[in-house]
Image 1 (cartoon, rainbow, N blue to C red):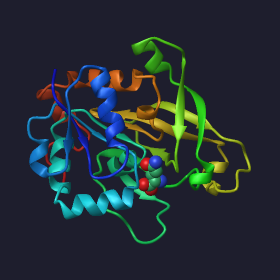
Image 2 (cartoon, helix red, strand yellow):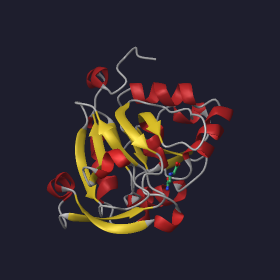
Image 3 (cartoon, rainbow, N blue to C red):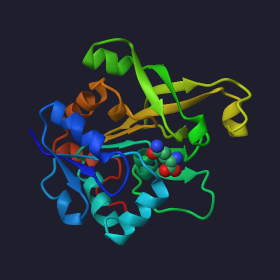
Length: 229
Ligand code: GLN
């Protein structure tokens, strides 16, 4: 099996590496552009996306990360990693932050509010259960979690979360729906607003590893396309 890289600048990368170990998959830490060479797939963990962006910039990782997305190899962003992969992030306290992009989504960085509003809930993910078996629901851990407010036509919605109407920290726009998107797939890209690496359920990791069926010629259909950026 191919080696899976985990961006190891900050955040929950050790937890992802531990799950890969449990699955018998070789995982390596990615801290420099050259660490991306020869990887079959990449995971971008949760953490704090502005800090992660600053560190990625410092290590000159953005061009190499964008190139990696363009190869069509699977890339999975969890939480802050989802923000990193999005084409657009809103809800910043000040200014913008650099993103890898590729995932045709608008993500609200702190949709669910602060640390105090972190929570766990059961989320139904029919696609995951169909592919990996097990219970129809997944225990989703949301920590200062983002949410996807808008997704483009090529984005497949894997899971949504219905929240209690009237929750004060939630943006007006999304309130009308009472529902936000929390897991998506677009070609070689997977994004989850929650943290599967913090649960004992390894189905998301298995599901992601199977996305590695993407071949070179399919890479031309990868989210960034061959010559964007
Ligand atoms: N809201 C955080 C951010 O902006 C992400 C939180 C997380 O990854 N647990 O980066």
